[in-house]
Length: 433
Image 1 (cartoon, one colour):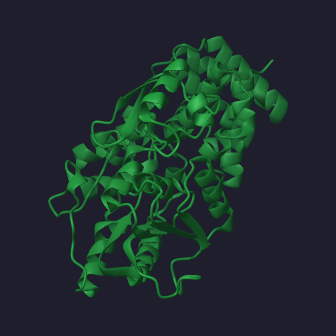
Image 2 (cartoon, one colour):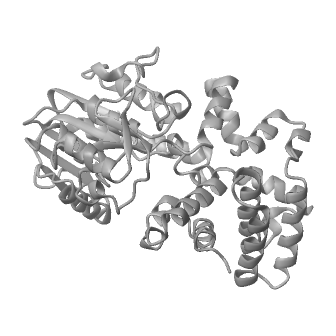
Image 3 (cartoon, rainbow, N blue to C red):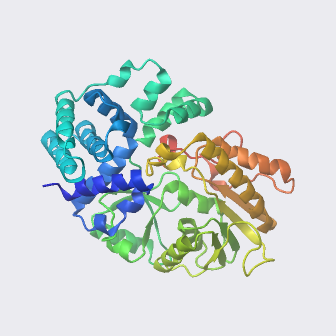
């Protein structure tokens, strides 16, 4: 019999590979939430762990099987990744369970002959669990790529952009689960009441060392079953994402435009900081994502957010002549600052895609600037660590728009770079980049 966690992890990994789905979206499904707490945690660990370490696991498959992983049928390859991940990284899992359930998965979902191969490979791996075959790779970039499970081109790029030591620290950090960060919702309940409710559910929090009003979960497990979650008293949001609203520095009564606003994390945070006084126009090109933003606003008791279908270009629907004291462009990006929580990105992204995104970002920033009132602020943010999507985009904009000048908000320290930009990194600040 296959455990519910392993079966669901296997199915999710197949969808990530075959359909290009995002793992965290699938892990947030009702099927996962219906699992026991123990199985839910294991499903999360297996899915995200396999995706984080995919290159290393495939190297081990080749070593133990003497076959190239890409030539194996997909169910066999995924079952081997799951089994090897448990043998290598999860000491609490007995080897027999990792092996037998991987074999059972292939019997149910793979070719008939595959079960014998999976059994032989995983038994071989279990008998030599400490093998480090990548150490024999002569090329240092290739060796690092395998050891820390990132594409070769990205390892090369980061070593060039950040230097070897910083790049290695970032590679290591990306393979660890991020801390769970939340913000308390002052529109729904006093902070003291929220903290007490969390404590009743066995959840202890501590203030972020970096971001005002952000908290890290120190112990306990958050899920939709938690009272504070159900009542809209808390919202799970990475500290770097929360930092953006403080950079915007909204004041009650302000008019704010957010471009590319869905799914609404920053919109609802801005509204909370404004005490539900003022106006936030939340524009996004996706009607489906705007519906999610509207539902989130209702759950978090936000009353001043106005979702509109707006691609960031052309006239602003219903408000063609309005300008705003703050304009936030939360630009679409490569997402390389979020690889800890979205590890599948690194297996899909290309250097060409980064360049394409940068051109799109430059165009969106030019358009967003049209809506800034005299004396207003234009805030540009991404969840990428790439220079092409950050400094280069802002530099090109400032070179062509002399009416704008750089402004460093009070919350910039300790994130300010020598060039005056605000940067966060997983390996430095334990938050997204």
